[in-house]
Image 1: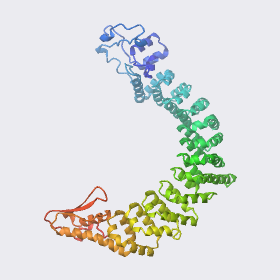
Image 2 (image 1 turned 60 degrees about the vertical axis):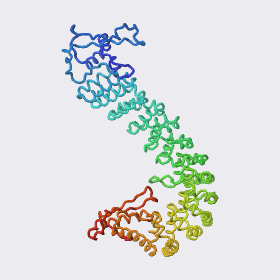
Image 3 (image 1 turned 45 degrees about the vertical axis):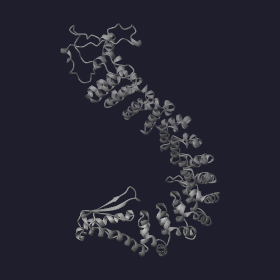
Image 4 (image 1 turned 180 degrees about the horizontal axis):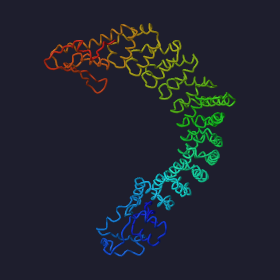
Length: 632
């Protein structure tokens, strides 16, 4: 019996064949004889010709009676003469010679034999290992060997049944173990067709221990696995839900426990009704937990949950709304309650529960709007406040007025600028005019700020021309300054799109046309000029002149005797691209290179072979280059 115990446990140290052999011969029981026949290769009788290897000098000292550190003294290894070493080597491949090796290595060897031997030999090896199933369940490495045994015994029904009967008594222990879980799962998987045996394991072993299993990570996994494979009948599902109910709060806070509860709630066959009331009572605490919030979301969206559950959920959250709005997990639940009513199930008609949910949603929005001043600049609270502002509730007009009073402060805030946009969009016309007056006082500074530029663009989108006249006038006066900066150029583009085509053309000719040579050297200003060129022919001609000036410099360089041309003006990315295309017209005679680390310091150099004058290629030679004019 010691042979396999040592093979399946790391704590037992090295396997010593001499000790196992003496134990088998001293007590030749039936299991011992089966193991000796299965694992020990057939050997001839020991002869007097065998030589005993002398122990090393350090081991010749007499060991104490109790051994070293309380362990039995290690027996000396007996070797076979050289001529007899091949005897018994041609066995069936099922027998394993348990030499001196670690227990983990022995288990690995047995797993390999179970996987690679013939089916009849595999059944013989499984039968030999069967009496030691209990010892395997208790050892460290035993579950790995048990898993291989289950896979090997699966094609043989009687072996699988015997193995299941032996494991059923230790099934809960296996399910609670980190490695034994995989044994329990494999057992359930391969017993799927044997309903009587499966019911014995699931209903007589798992369900009585469901309360203990559900509080464990691996136990909850095995319960969920059995449930999702439809191994529990109606009574079994009700028993499982009843076992979880007393400590459902703790189960929902664990990853696999929350999956088990979600599976029970989402099952269309029902049976989880006893879980609804405890979950809704503890909604305020569960909603802040990552896994608990997912359970509550499943409860609210499940067609099996009562239609009054959403109203009860919002009623539980209302007293804690301001605290939960700043929580990274709970704020998603609040947004879902405020924005997305439960989708009506096919065949359902409006009822009093829906009206109750709508009324509770308005009360929740009122509570959030009332304390919105402290949420406006919070990373998560700002999202909840925006959702609450969608509802026309008491206090919204006062909150919008407070937010507009803080327009400059909120505009430059990373999160407050979005709240300001929502406030302006839902403000009365007179409040919008006041917001424009406040933003116009520092419109250039705000337009050049990353976050405030979003607020200005949002304000321009939702205001009429009459409401935004003050802000538009302030931005028109600084149009050139806005075009020079990358962020403020986006505000200028939004401003130009609001204007009618005729008015836009007159504005461009008056304010931007004189600065076209300067703006052509700024990359983001070129984008603004392109929009202006669509409504102003004069701007288009001025841009064409600037591009042709660069091309003339390249043409003059090609006709000269110089070898290098460094263009004397700061070019935008658009101008450099057009210059590169113009250089390509000369084929391999000219080479253009952009030199510089940044967009602002980059210049264009054109190189030419010494003493060679370049000429443009003929149109037919240049067709494959795809060279196009500036404006089409």
